[in-house]
Length: 329
Image (cartoon, rainbow, N blue to C red; front, side, top):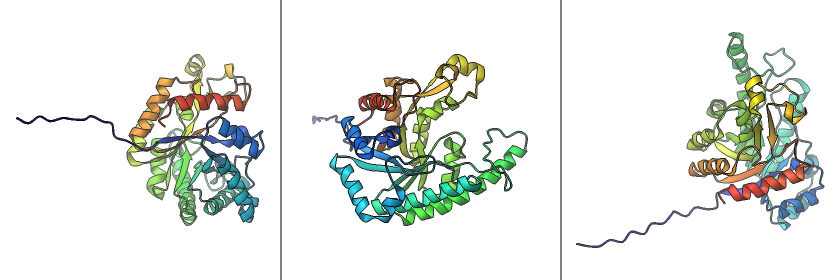
């Protein structure tokens, strides 16, 4: 009889996650001061707003497109602090009617061109929301299928959305962009699992989700389940580290929040909060475990819009400390 020895050892994986910051949260700081703050907080990579909804506080799109020297100086400042660019963010509504859609499409076009020049392979965006018909002047977010005209409106909107993103994806490929990560944000055609899959099936795997759990919480979804489901086909391309806290008494009464975004926090059914102030360590560890078990390897990018913190910098610092303790890295 032979004896056998079995050595049990966990497989070794590369570091799956890096701490990132969507730098619009530090818009009050000049570029180099923002970089110093990031390095001090243990942030490793940057998600830089380039335009559309973002005021692009740390990046002059036209200047960087025009000047190789400006691009080199910009990258040198980042690399000198041990940081890197994880993604550009051009979140907006490129399928909106009128001047808004036109301007946001132009910003996306320039963002893709700059990504090519600076070697950035990921662009974070939003799918956008078209008008309800060819003659309408405003975007129209339909969230119900009755009366039947609602379904007719959505079919029109999907046609507009798919047509735009097919063209944008082709442009992205010529610019070396490998990932267009669309945020699951309300007031967009893409906001959940079925909608990102519909667009991805029509356009191709360059399209995927920027999974932001904060929106799922107040819309009634489950980010833990989304992480499990969408990693099955590598559909999660980017992750936002952002939390929200539900006020159960008001949520139970109102269901859908109609108070103004800037109204007092205690009047609202939910609020965006610094990471850890809506959901605890155990929840976030399970979330990250689901992502990594499904194969996600990439940034977790802090985004802050906390109405209760004294300022964004404190909210970011608290989020960074929390994430460094809960991320798989």
